[in-house]
Length: 251
Image (cartoon, rainbow, N blue to C red; front, side):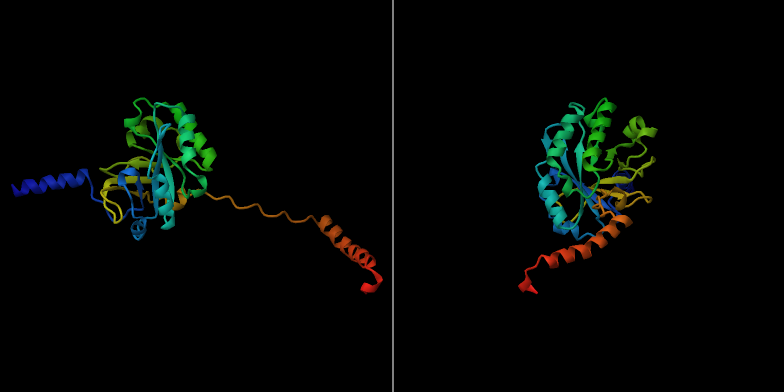
């Protein structure tokens, strides 16, 4: 009986691996309720957080603004994700996301969350348009969160090779190219009640690969040699004119 119980728990650990010390980030939504971000930020292994913003054309996560504000105040890098819906257009979904997600408060590329439960038949023209709209607004290609099955069915072709992939697999490391691996739904973290998703990077990548590149202000153009000479020649003449214009008593 004892050996049977040990085997049972061993199988559970294989099916639902316990979180290891290798986590790089977490993703959260209203299901984590009110998070103490100061406590979360004390875990030096957590570099970033992805926060649910919207779903479909009308759903807005009620904890989103609080989570973004508090996570950034605590010093964490923040990104936002949208859960795709097969029921509404790309424009409607993008409009919902854009109204909620302030691009000035984003450190990381946006994520488009595509799950089988939300789309029996994936309309790839709609997905393409939504990816295009998000990239144009936020200045970076979105990362695609999905399963290996959906990746192999829809994204394993040349046109999607330039995207980063955020793959959920709770049994083993993904067998396809990925940037982030969501390896457990049962992570435990101080400051968060209940479970939270843990993710870690492929060895080829780091958080630098998913940061939104901030545009540097344009540098002033250097003066052309002829313009510089003309400006220098004009200065003595200006000085003479100014001196001549002064009243006699001002000398």
